[in-house]
Amino acid sequence: MAAVRSEGTFVVVGGGIAGVTCAEQLAVNFPAEDILLVTASPVIKAVTNFKQVSKVLEEFDVEEQPSTVLENRFPNIKVIESGVKQLKSEEHCIFTEDGHQHVYKKLCLCAGAKPKLICEGNPYVLGIRDTDSAQEFQRQLTKAKRIMIVGNGGIALELVYEIEGCEVIWAIKDKAIGNTFFDAGAAEFLTSKLMSEKSEAKIAHRRTIYTIEGAKDENRSKAKADNVGSALGPDWHGGLNLKGPEEFSHSIHIETRCEVKNIYLQEEFKITKKKPLTFPKHQDKPVTVDKETWPVYVELSNGKIYGCDFIVSATGVTPNVHPFLHGNNFDLGEDGGLKVDEQMRTSLPDIYAAGDICTACWQPSPVWQQMRLWTQARQMGWYAAKCMAAATSGHSIDMDFSFELFAHVTKFFNYKVVLLGKYNAQGLGSDHELMLRCTRGQEYVKVVMQNGRMMGAVLIGETDLEETFENLILNQMDLSSYGENLLDPNIDIEDYFD
Ligand SMILES: Cc1cc2nc3c(=O)[nH]c(=O)nc-3n(C[C@H](O)[C@H](O)[C@H](O)COP(=O)(O)OP(=O)(O)OC[C@H]3O[C@@H](n4cnc5c(N)ncnc54)[C@H](O)[C@@H]3O)c2cc1C
Ligand SMILES: NC(=O)c1ccc[n+]([C@@H]2O[C@H](COP(=O)([O-])OP(=O)(O)OC[C@H]3O[C@@H](n4cnc5c(N)ncnc54)[C@H](O)[C@@H]3O)[C@@H](O)[C@H]2O)c1
Image (cartoon, rainbow, N blue to C red; front, side, top):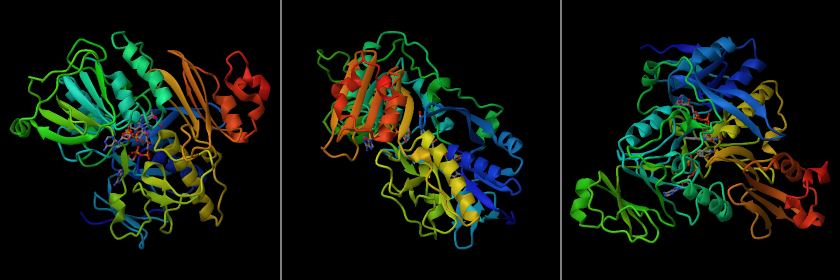
């Protein structure tokens, strides 16, 4: 097909939350200009029911929509459904897989991230990122008697709680579960819930509507196998039936402080003559040699070997920078993301980046850190558009308030979880103290204090403390005189600080 050169003005790459939010904001700022949104996925992500819970905490639903919905809402946005295969930054031009090229005045790269798998290319190792990969996982789960989950972050936490009717061996590097979100105390609080619910029926509790309004399956299948779709988000498993073939609820065994050493296919494993173990059903019952034959075997660094139907690698993400690197000398962060400054600019002229693809390289507020999350993708996409608009008129703008304080609200094991600031004392060294309040099965409250100031908090359950603690972290008030009263459930601390 002959190359068509269109004269784009602002071009945004990526139909996830970062890209869509950026394009929407550009469309508002420049109603008379065309905004081009180029995306490899056949549907785009839309933020709906946005709710500012407090100054910084926000909650919203996420919908997958056909791109026409966006174009109808913003007539100056034109969506091009094609992957970018090359960027020529010196010529201010991108090339798409459909054979076209688009010239940009300013470009914002929002191409997300890809799962970082423990064993790339192994058909028994699945990653979960977009709707297609989640559905593939669900399909395989319906036939699986035992799976192994590797990783200890958000996806693993959600999966171990949701999966039923299938034995799950959960292999983690750390000594406690959920290391990206919790310390050992919070992990213990959650583990007891997980284990106590083993045989109980779970109460369905859904927070997010996850719909594919109007998007047909044939649209979906148009996405090429190697093209990543947008990342899933809050309550992504809500619409999936995560049930194995057996009639039991949870059956989880956790292997701590270990990594995957080897993965063997069935035939390879036979030759090794190594001995796999049965599923450890009870703590006090010794495991024996497993006589069953499994499609794949995993040898852990603690010497144990388990057979299973497949492995889920929930081991984090790698920014999806690859399509943009050839011939362009971007500065990359240690995590492989495009480095962006406080105006969301990459190291190359007129190229901005937002969301999972970027690595924030500005001097952050003492209580903010980047995490590849839905909320940050939205905030960065919005702020990048503001920066692009300001730069167009020769200005720069102040950093948005949302980057003052890290704030994340989510749900794990059916508990509301709020994380604020340096919730795990990240980067605070040993010079800090923790205050705790815990009622088993109900709530877990932890605050991180430094020099009498609150630096972070973990709130699990319906604590109703988020707004007060958010204010205390933001205003850095000296709280030394309140001592332990700060967490005394009999004292209404809001009264203190009103
Ligand atoms: C299973 C799962 C559960 C999650 N749960 C939560 C949660 O509960 N809370 C939370 O805050 N976060 C959650 N996250 C993280 C959150 O989804 C991401 O941080 C966020 O969606 C990133 O948005 P993004 O727009 O940067 O990237 P993405 O959503 O990945 O979007 C990238 C877009 O770029 C497009 N693209 C890629 N390559 C190209 C190319 N070459 N050319 C053109 N387009 C391209 C893709 O098709 C896609 O549209 C979860 C992630 C996963 C995988
Ligand atoms: N509710 C939520 O907020 C939520 C839920 C799901 C996913 N997410 C986000 O989606 C993205 C993907 O989730 P994720 O769970 O894959 O990533 P993650 O970054 O949350 O966790 C990755 C985990 O894998 C572990 N790990 C890394 N390499 C490993 C290896 N070689 N062997 C064993 N363990 C290894 C890490 O220690 C960490 O525990 C993340 O950005 C995450 O924040 C958020």
